[in-house]
Length: 293
Image (tube, rainbow, N blue to C red; front, side, top):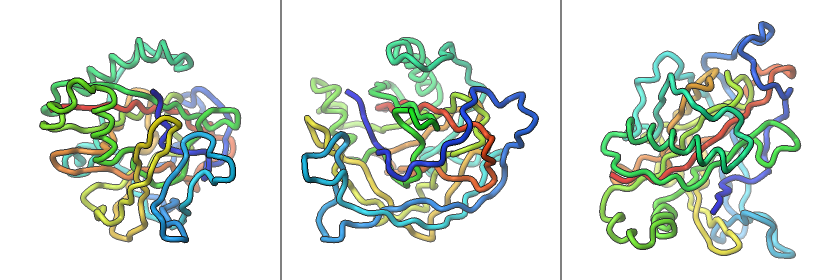
């Protein structure tokens, strides 16, 4: 089963497609705090429950029934203070110096065979209390008009508590009842493919600064079932961050749901005003995992 937690609206500008910027002396990596516009959730005008069709909607129906609310936000750089942030409090964390045998990221079967085991081991080795990991899908994004998925500038959370429970039941039906008695989480493992990232970086809001009433469940309608993602309403108390110039050996952990502590992280790509037209567009992969224990 594949997951599509974003759609192709609100996409970011396309930049030059280049696979490696490490040795390009004409590119200065943007660092430090920055202000940019993020797109937040706006409720359906008729007051109905929000929904979004993952694929082509039924004839006569829009892709989604809710709107968008752009708002300028201040985004702090965590570079140099990565250890100050933790999954249980902020719902994001970082890991550096991670090697991978997967180099191309062009074949899904090869990614599952080579990269998935690396991600599973990474989570088991670095998530306190983790006893079991199930990777259930991944998304590759490329800043290219021909790419299947592009970075999307919209604040969201990939899963809610309800959809995480459904995920457990869907992927592990024979064990779900017992597994749902313990701690369960969904954690995304995010990394660039052509780092350092100099365009369309990822912003994320510390969970403890995000009020519960800012998170809005949205029906995520597949052809064969209905899941749930979350829109994010703007609130000036949210603290937003990014990790400047992320490289290919760095991993960002984004926790969408935690049945124990409730920490969850809104996130969104954003347009960095310091990005120049000749900078390479961001390419990245996020792998989504159920983590038990």
